Image (cartoon, rainbow over all chains, first blue to last red; front, side, top):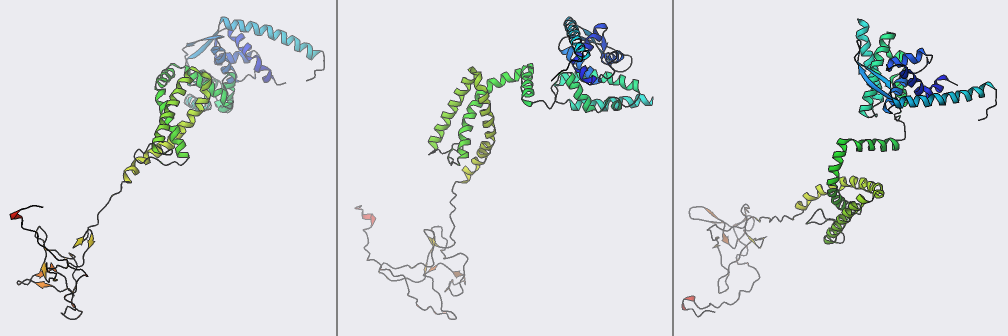
Length: 111
Length: 311
């Protein structure tokens, strides 16, 4: 399975985790995700995801002037975002445990 | 310095194409998305130092990824859902809501118009004839029934409009009807605008043909035969109108064979009757006493009015 396909369902959680650690603007969040090992995450995916999380109330945003180029829109996590992140953590732990068990024990999975 | 000048225009071109690919996204959402992207593109460009497109791929793909990650409906999504959502979003915006309210107040005018359009469109489709006196009224049997049909349709349409305000389920069916009638407005309006002129043009203009020369009840005369009271045909009687104008057969005609009298001063006299014609090549009138086949009645003279006994 392609990593980018795996990423699609989990990018929300990854972005929330990065922003929860420290507020960041779009390109900054992208860089930190890549630095964390998600090297193949798409630029547009990250920007789109941030906007969607913001619209859903999981992120808050504020603008800071930048020395070079346009102003930067920073994102910070909200209480709702933290709740969503906590939920994603549990779900991921559960899911990855299940999948690890399945994949490591050579069980035949029929479709 | 060259890169600084090169990079922004590269970013702007890329951004413009992304914006174009997101043309169907609501403006404020798109602007926010693009503001986010723009700042990041500048950083991408300045860090990589190369073309943004080389770094990020075609702008259309970038836009599609952005759209899907942002949870916006891709442009290929079923239009019904997108349309309904767009309409709802539009209807909820305060500016549109205000216009909709005033439209709602004007709706009864449309209801009345719609009633008329329905009758007129059906009459047009059926090829009915139209009242001559009132070009807007189709003749259904006759113009009076047409006018009644219009009144009934207008009343029914208004009743339908009032009923639909209380009955939300009826709205879909009614909006289909409205669209159909709205489309029918065009042929009806075209018909009406053409109709008003011919109504005037069909007036029959009786143009009396002016008969040159002498005429009786519009029929040209080719001669006049005066008789004396004792029944003898008179010759060379000069006739004049009340205004003293000499009477002539035809003002312009001059027949070389016509026998013309002359005044002593040598002037030609055309008002001498009966008109006679010479035999060709001569100055002889073949039958100077020829006249119509009439029997002149015997005449009695009424008593003179001076000694009135009246009658």
